[in-house]
Amino acid sequence: MDLKDKKERNKRHKKAMQRKKKYVDSRIAKATIEKGLLIVLTGNGKGKSSSAFGMLARSVGHGLHCGVVQFIKGVWACGEQMLFEGNPLVDFHVMKTGFTWETQDREKDIAAAEKTWNKAVSFLRDTTYNVVILDELTYMISYGYLDKATVLNALRERPPKQHVIITGRNASKELIEMADTVSEIADSKHAFNNGIKVQKGIDY
Ligand code: ATP
Ligand code: MG
Image (spheres, rainbow, N blue to C red):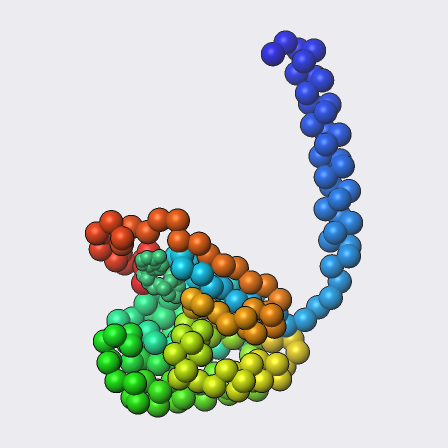
């Protein structure tokens, strides 16, 4: 590229960026609503819980008060639990039953789900919690362990400025409708499906 072409290209780039800035600034100016968000992270790909815990890290960094409820999980401690448990800004509650194919006991799972849900409700009724994470909640609804209408009501009636992040596959259409932000993470490829072991720090 000779000097003249380079100058011409730089000029075009500057013009394009000026147009882009104008567009971005106008969109930023239009986004004025402040409210507690309902965020749903669903789909078959990896990245739902780790995204939720990424937002937890951001929130704690800003000094926000957070409540975390992990449904299903709990047989082995996850890195996020070890990092945030004991942090004065984070209240961490884990169902601790493990996966349904491990417990193989529907009645026991339902009782545990209800007990864990009560903890979630206590966060959803408390205005002092800025952010609430309900990790793997969708399974409690799709397995019929928790009543869908009860869950949707508790979400609807939460403090207006409280953010709630829900993770898990097969989020119901009502949950998706109610949410402000929904990410459906696609499974393009996963190491585990090629015989690679779960990895500390990456998978848990
Ligand atoms: P992560 O916690 O890594 O963000 P996730 O929350 O999106 O994963 P879960 O189904 O809750 O997905 O994942 C729990 C575990 O299963 C993690 O160890 C994750 O790496 C693994 N996993 C997630 N998606 C897949 C997949 N498509 N195939 C195989 N294993 C998966
Ligand atoms: Mg998960």
